Length: 132
Ligand SMILES: [Fe+2]
Image (cartoon, rainbow, N blue to C red; front, side, top):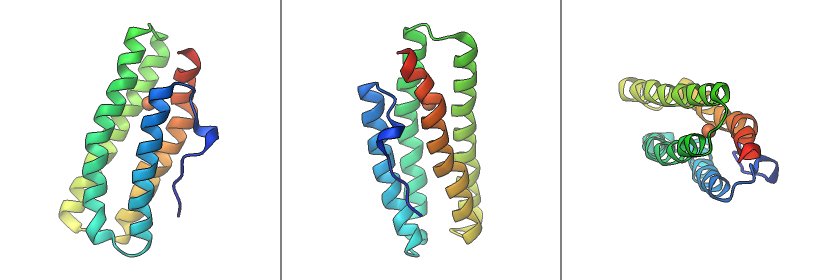
């Protein structure tokens, strides 16, 4: 399983793209370590990283939406998605604290965090980037 930022994920706003690249590079490193069976070492670190990084990154996007008067309905959809990600992350973190780095948890991380990010960036963030 690989998790890579590619040109077609570019949203055209420099700072957003820079942060997405950083996010994808770090997450890819964690995902690779998980694939190599090192999940007991990296899963918690991955989730801690995501927690702090999405705060910075989601806040940037949310500031742009306000500052540039982004469409109300689109803002609502976007904010809702950020909220979903945060709650997925919180849920998976507490699952980790209870059960450790299980195979099932790895699968959920892939689905609810990694795949989520790709879909979100390619659709929702791109829409915002087009507007900005
Ligand atoms: Fe976003």
